[in-house]
Amino acid sequence: MNFDFSDDQKQLRDQARKFLAEKCSPKAVRVVLDGKATYDKELWKGLAEMGFLGVAIPEEYGGAGAGHLELCVIAEEMGRANAPVPFSSTVYLAAEALLIAGSDAQKKKWLPAIASGEAIGTLALFEGKGNPSPKNVKLTAVNGVLNGVKKPVADGTIADFAVVAARTGSSGRENDISLFLVDLRAGGVEIKSLTNLDPTRGQAEISFRDCRVEPLGAAGEGWSILTAVLDRAAVLCAFEQVGGADRALEMGRDYALDRIAFGRQIGSFQAVKHMLADMYVSATLARSNSYYGAWALSTNAAELPEAAAAARISATQAFQHCAKNNIQVHGGMGFTWEFDCHMYYRRANAMALGLGSLSYWEDQLIDRMRKKNAA
Image (cartoon, rainbow, N blue to C red):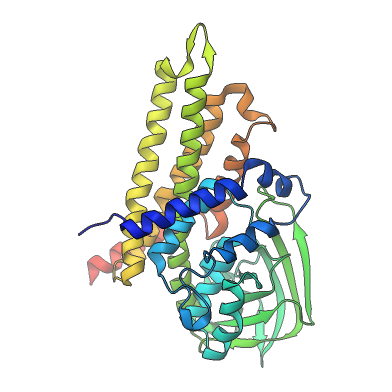
C-alpha cells in the first residue's frame, strides 16, 4: 500500500506553492489581519482561475473533477501560506455538504458558482459554546421557516449561502436534526460580525427570523449528513494544519540558524535543538495520520471515521505545538506584531476549535474504536 502522492499530485503541490508564494505573501495576509479587507478577493479570484476551488467538484458541476487527494494537496499549501480566504468554510464544508446531500438542482446552482469563485458558502452549526451535538441545536425549522441564532459561523459576514442545521423534531434523538440551504442575501437574515482570535478568518452571528429555506437532504437525516461532512472536513483541515505546522517549524529553524548570541548561532544551543526536534516529531506524526486520513477519504474506506479523528487530533496538536514553539525560538521578538510568528499562532488556535474542540475529537476517536472493536 503506497501512502505517498503521485507525481502528478506532487506537481500540483509545486504549482500551488509557487502560486501562493507569489500571491499570498505575509504582507498580503496582513492587509486582512489589520482590518483593511474582510478577505483577499484577488487571491480568491486567482484560486478560482487556477482551478483550486473546484479541484474535488465533478466536471459536470463546473469543477476539475480531480478528487480528494488533490484537494488535500491544495489544503496543505493553503495552510503553509496562512491564506486569508474562506477556503475551508466554502470548500471543505459547504461544497462537501452539497456533494453528499444536495439535489441535482442545488448542485447545479451552487457548485459551479463555488468552483468559479462567484459564491462563498459556510456551515452554520454552532449556537454559542459547546461541541457538535444534536442536543446543542436549538434553532428550529417549522414548515420550511427558520427561527433562531447561529454563532460563531465561519466567514458568515462574507458568505452568500449557508448550510444550516435545525431542529425539526422533539424526540431528543439524532433524527430530530435536518439540514437546510439558506440564501444569506434573502429576507429574514441578520448578520453581525464577531471579534475573534484570527481576523483573517472572520466569524459571524447569524439570526434567522421567519426565514424561508429549502431542505438539504432528507428530513431527519441532518445529523448523519453532518457527521460525514465533519469527518471529511477533519481530514482536509488536518492537511491545512500540517502545512501551517511545517511552515512554523521552518520559520523557527531559519531564525535559529541566522540569530547570533554569545558569538554563535542560537541553533547550536541544546535547548533550541531539542525544541526544534520536538516540533519536527509532532509535525511528522501529524503528517503520517493525515496521509492515512487522505487514503480513507479518497477511497471512502470503512476506516474513515477513525482515520479522520486521528488526523484531526494529531494535526491540531502539531500545529499548536509548532506555532507556540516558533515564538519561543524567536524569543522576545517572536511576541511582537512586526514578526509573523503570531499569525500562525492565531490560525493554529482558531483552527483547533473550528470543527469542535480537541477533547471532542479525542472522545470521538475512543467511541468509534470501541464500536468497531465491539462489532
